[in-house]
Image (tube, helix red, strand yellow):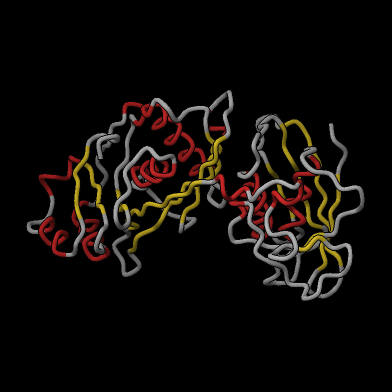
Length: 330
């Protein structure tokens, strides 16, 4: 078992933050556990950052749990601690080592690409590992490797968020994949940071099943899934998720515009698309949001219930419609 490691980061007030990482057998627990004194929301963000950054690793081992802690909560709005957490996670698992104590400052809006966008130090003191162009632009540079983002393929699809109120809107789901052949359960290679455990499990189950139908998807990819909204109800996102995954893996033709989709299934392993509730309000929402080049996918079971003139209205907007009962022929 690897010994605990510490990585420090310079806070906005000039003091140090300390990240401590330790390793223990997973034993059915979460792969990453994070804690920050009196800041549970920040601990959840730490977990999300680390899981996203792991997407760029060529191999993964789900048998161990990493426990990360910050000794105190950083100042509000500060994100420079993110790089320190990512490095501590890699160091405790033996993926990267430094001959000297590590002080790191950096943040990113795309950890799943291994990109480091910058830091808030101004002029970084000598010996500080600072993220951003001209310093440490991506995680591959730690070991002299190319930009890991070049090997990641990402695609988005949109699904309707409907609650019957003025806030009804489209929500995106983004799937990022990188080649990473592996053995074992497909679900272990699929992460959905930033959402609750139940949705994470549902996302992994849907993708594993739909890839089984694909015939070429299992055991080939490291996958990270992100949602535009972290909290929502229902399963009508499933078809959009499957379509984003198929586009990211090059298994689906791309629309000129966006793919807007709603549908679910109890049999993704058979490629079947089943109905969801809310035909009329969701059609109204999709009709309002449709733009030229968009491809709209709804369950075949909706076909007889579509509002009169809706299909023609979509065509006038330059969008196209397909009522589907199976993936793979869309």
